[in-house]
Image (cartoon, rainbow, N blue to C red; front, side):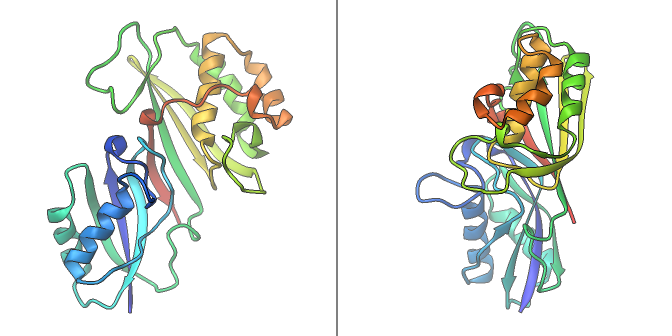
Length: 244
């Protein structure tokens, strides 16, 4: 028996997220179907992160176990010949049988992209959120400092999650502006349901002047989703890297 680790890129625009589900086309199912054709056997693909509908990935990681003798490099090549154009396997390798892509990850890095100008960008319409209002980047950075470290992020968790432990450790939260684009990189040991997008929505409100930068700490302490900003659009979010 072998354990194969895949590094995966995908455009999430036409998918109902990563995880297989009863209704809706998912990235996991598309890859599992391709693996079944290549190896002539069913496998269960375990993903490092359950990205939501419309969320993209450059560095998603997944693993599956197989008894096939086919080389990992040949599996990668075969899968890429079968997968739809919006999914690609960038790496495939043998790893120890004990490796689990979700359980063994130490942190994940997500990037959120904002187009901040007075007209939308047709080229990036599927990959960035359009915000026509002037954003104060310095204020957004001040607000973000309250979120770095091990905190209780219940205020930034969308209803529908059943996790009892809402504490997570944000290791880095970096905002940068390049031309008309604002990039927000968040690295954490884990994310609650819609946590990253709720943080972005709150920071956008700070940038617009709707919420004071100094209020972010109070929002965090209140543990109330009603006080945080809206959930930012999924299309601006991309899973960049999973660290082990």
